[in-house]
Amino acid sequence: MTHESITISNYSFSIGDKSILHDISLAVNGGEFLSIIGPNGAGKSTLIKCLIRINTGGKGEISLAGKPLESYRQKELACLLGYVPQSDGRSLPFSVEEFVMMGRYPYLSPFTPISHRDEQAVQDALDLTGTGHLADRVMNTLSGGERQNVLIAAALAQGTRILLLDEPTTFLDPKHVAAVHRILKRINLERGITIVMVTHDINAAALLSNRIAILKEGRVAFEGFPEEVMRNSVLSGIYDKSFLFVTHPVTGQQLIVHEEAGK
Amino acid sequence: MKKSAVLILLALGSIIVLAGAPVIGMKRIALDTILHPSALDMDSSIFWKMRVPRVLTSFLAGSALAISGMAFQALFRNPLATPFTLGVSSGAAFGAALSILTGFTFTFFGISGMSIGSLAGALISILAVYGFTRMRKGFSTATMLLAGVAISFFFSSLILFLQYLSDFTQSFRIVRWLMGGIEAVGYDSILGVLPFILAGGAIVFALTHELNLFSAGEDIATSRGVEVGKMKTVLFFAVSLMIGGVVSVCGPIGFVGMMSPHISRILVGANHRYLAPATFLFGGLFLTLCDTLARIVIAPAEIPVGIVTALLGGPFFIWLLLSGSSEKSMLR
Image 1 (tube, helix red, strand yellow):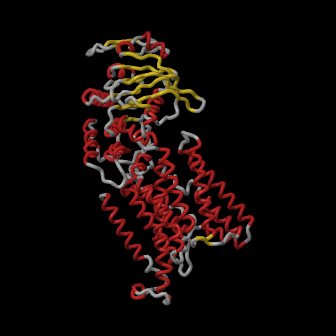
Image 2 (image 1 turned 30 degrees about the horizontal axis):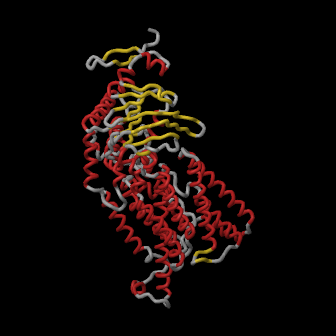
Image 3 (image 1 turned 60 degrees about the vertical axis):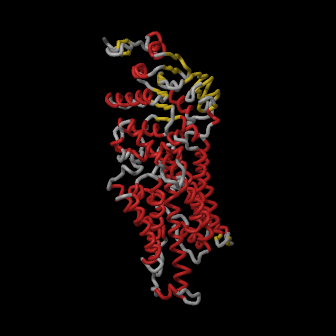
């Protein structure tokens, strides 16, 4: 078992009486890019939040680097797992630099000035995400795409070996979607950072990840390599809809297109 | 302007106001009398035993109210969330009204029975708000604010009921107390609550990183390593200490707690490393100035300071909101 792997075994989670996740078993291997896809309400975001202990009190076991998740203090966890939340569009009245510096929380202590190492980590995260030129801007004035890149930078500044992302491209235009994908691919390949991404973008999952897990109604419905997932026999059952497939002109991968109604 | 420059200006302003405010008053006091205090001299007593403790009390009270408001605004991610909007003032007022009605009049370490009643009331209502946050996970901020408003109305009705039961003198005393006022004579009352204010304030100042993360949202805070539940408890405890202490001496003084952090945020931004000291100084400065005005405007009579803070602060605050620069604030 590598240093940065996550193992989820027979994990269930409910909110009140409502059961969200049932008996999930899933492993994340060190260095891989795992995408989690599935219909709305499948429990994808909930699962990610369980990993970072925003959600607590599930049954079953999650282990991180060979130790149960509960055995970590929250700050220790924050040194191992970075999290990029779904953008909620709420006010963030901080400058970009201040916000990214907040990712250094697990290493900061009260009343002591920020260390050179913290500044270095922030600068590195800004460079890696191409957000250095925004450093003095106030978060509230950024466009959706810029804001998303800064959210990723803030998680990177945490210096973790695993990054969890919750629908990082949902509200972005194609240019910014491409930019986020480029950043993710880069940190995965160049830095060897393990990536777990929840997404609705099936094609992005196919193009970017090493492996795809599909959640449906709180269960792992399918798990496999992109070429195993990108088949009508797999996807149509999960999404209750049939898909057409085309071949990517450059990489030769299978991608989905939607049938237009009335044609 | 640079943030550190703003802080230095606020600190200088505070020193000037702290030194200048006691000199101002209906009675002119010679510098010589101030420098050579004597227990027998009337002027010296007015200066050292009335004005100085009063100015110190108002500064500390303003600071404590302001950083309490700041902490709540960050915790709830809402500029309206202050201990006062969440029903603490009416809880405290109910406690005070009850002690006036029941004639609960002994003193304890220089704190009157009425103060103890208000302290208890403040703590009960703040605990009620806190209880709601713990009761169900995923309680939204909007629900919290509504619960606070409900608590506020509940206690306000109880106060009206008490007034209905009380005689004319008692009723007048209750109304007068509700207006808020700083009437320190000597140092006993301020020394009595100083430990509460200092302890609560120190906790808030030690948790500036956490406050930053709270204002970015609890999910982000958790993922960055903040023990959200524990830190919330600690901050509620700190705010209770401060508010309980202030209210027991000064009554319910509104507005300072909402306005000071907001203006400070426009001045130095939302990073609590700068915001906390700026808010502390601004709140102290503002309340001291208001109280000095309250003493001199219709001297020899005094206006309750709660009236001055709202009359002065209200229009200014609205002007500020209309004039923009909201990107650094929480309003967006």
